[in-house]
Image 1: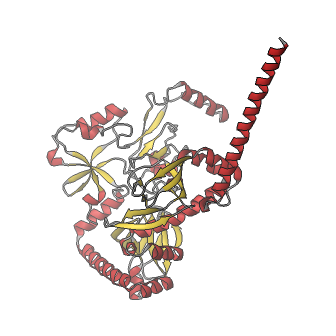
Image 2 (image 1 turned 60 degrees about the vertical axis):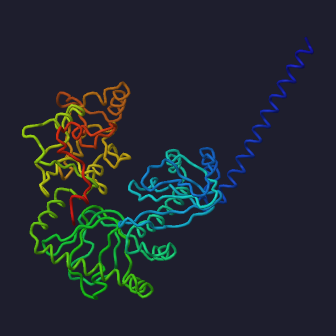
Length: 483
């Protein structure tokens, strides 16, 4: 009996010693991982406890030369840290030409863009050598950022620099520069923010800078007449600098706008060093003068441009259009299909007629500065992977988004079950306990915001699928408009 007890104690001691040895090995491995991560430039200065968390959420991946790790048009849910090897970043400019943005090596990272900007212009990433990368789920890394400000600052700095370089890479004027030349130019650019409606350039004032639109949309106007619409990747202000004359038009922010300003002195030095850019700029300026002169005398085009701006047709990438010539009179199958799927129709017709097409009244899926998103106190309107704004289950039916939308594209409808779960009822009770109110009238049935989200969560668009003649289709904005 005594022998069995001693044997049991010996086995217990061995098990405990083994567990302690494993714990020491795990601790030593964790320390080695933290030390290795601390040597990466992109993580320099990050606290050891946060590096340990990054190590715990990472997976080691290897890629052979020629592998496309990320594609510029495909969503990706990971951030990558380069432990060994070389990758190239490339994207296509507005003219469809492939542009090399840069070469990344050990200590760099990529895939961080969506952590800070929903509209970050992605780049394709290709392994140039055998690469060993740490793959980190972006969702997990995002939860770490609030408690690791030094990590957030480091990644945001990388994001900002790469955003500037990729913006320049997408502008045909600068895409022919080498990555090194664009990097030098990026260091000269001064980021500026303008709120919706602000005047960036005023007619009659001298030129101060060349402006590249990083994010947002602007309109160009001479007097009361709108003559142009520009969005991200476009530039303006070059005419006054080239001609050394005052600006001949106002430039106003249609949405909140982020621009990159190249001061006049740096602009002159750039053209001195890059005479080919001067030739391109003069060609652009001459074409713009011709376009401006043409639009001032083309009343139909002026009306189209003004209608497009006033009705928000240029705020998104696509519009839902109807061909009246193919539409059967009295047929409402598309509206009925929409209402059957969502409880109330999200589209109406007889909107803006352009090129014999009816641009329907529906959500514009505004890419930048969506007023409904800004007005929502619950952050309940969010982007999905297909570029549509979606009303999530966070919606409380407060209705703030309805008057905020300048295009009357959002309505409140009765909530017939989206928030009828026990968990949702409990959440409403908790909110009521936190902010108790004395009811002054009988309670109203729950409501929620209703807007077109291109049939988020479904494999088709109900209205398009229901149309028996093919009169409805989702059309790219650039296909509909020539300006």
